[in-house]
Length: 264
Ligand code: BTN
Image 1 (tube, rainbow, N blue to C red):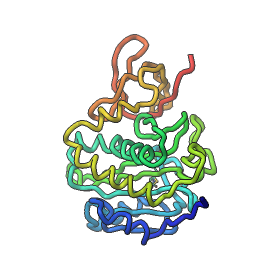
Image 2: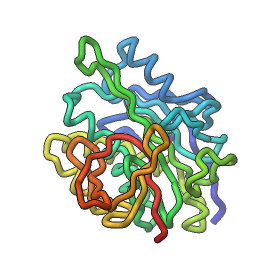
Image 3: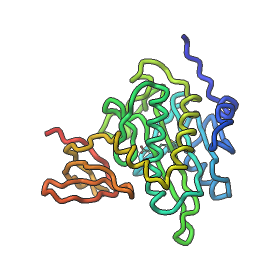
């Protein structure tokens, strides 16, 4: 069967009629970054559940301000505005929530089981497929709103290398056929809604750890000063930190960085 791309405001809004999130829906053929647009909308009072979707991003951003590529007709670039469950333990689970919701959506449609790489990447067959960027605004130390940005490489892989440490791919190259982006987005919105309602139950971390890439393996964390720290990846803490067993046996929490597998 020939694949026909039907990604548009109309098809997306129709697919989301029964979903808790996705209203209002903003759809752009081309935009700089859905996260930047979401921040503008959140600042001007857009409600929880607002969803910003773009077919193409010209200035998509990832963690550490890296470029995130979303060429036209190729992927999902979406941002949710969230407001109601924003106390601190919940906020630190949002990257886990985003990556787990994405993994579930892929599994439901593509018959493949993604793994999750700390802190918030979705990987299949040792390649990165999707990434999450969470941005929060505080007023007088209280969280005001949060943007959950999700990028998925669906029908083509990024054109340029944005991170020299790992390979990237797309769903179509892995499963051997193109994927309907409207269906994938609907599953994603559904899963974000379900998991958002479960934030207080602490079940997200348990589910995330079941899929954790390189769990109990020898890894190296490159911290923000580019220093490598070696150890065994034991799991993830309730606050989202990586639990690492150093070569000395000591257990430490790592709050930020990039992990890679050690080959020895
Ligand atoms: C990462 O892996 O570093 C995170 C990538 C997050 C990309 C998404 S695409 C939708 C949203 N808009 C952006 O500019 N970034 C996020």
